[in-house]
Length: 134
Ligand SMILES: [Zn+2]
Image (cartoon, rainbow, N blue to C red; front, side, top):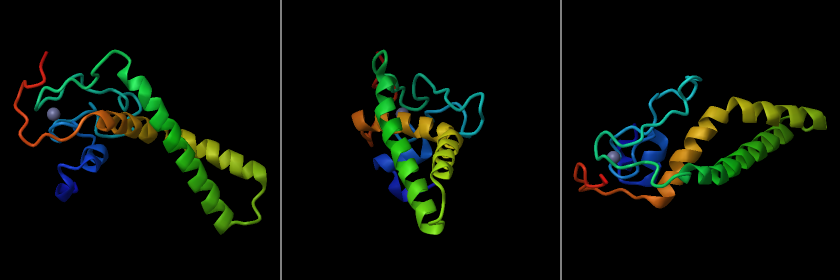
């Protein structure tokens, strides 16, 4: 998908690919709604051997990204409802935002981790296998 974007961070993010080589998969399951496995990721890239969790607790930082995505989703839901159904009562907003956050949780979780990883890594076109092995 989106082959013309290869080499850009958005390619790695949208395809859940390794941020270094853009070829190896980051997540074990391709389906965000495979609820048993959606959050499981490989420890190393199968193509370039990049270690995804560069230090212990690295992915705790993804909570900041997750928070931003959650706020963006909540605002989008609020604005869409406000525009389409201006007479909506306040508790409907609260309910729809809570339901939206729950329904999109697996996507949010996966996106926030891969975005966080892409903040600290970039594409290396001439990656060599085992270059990152330590
Ligand atoms: Zn890789």
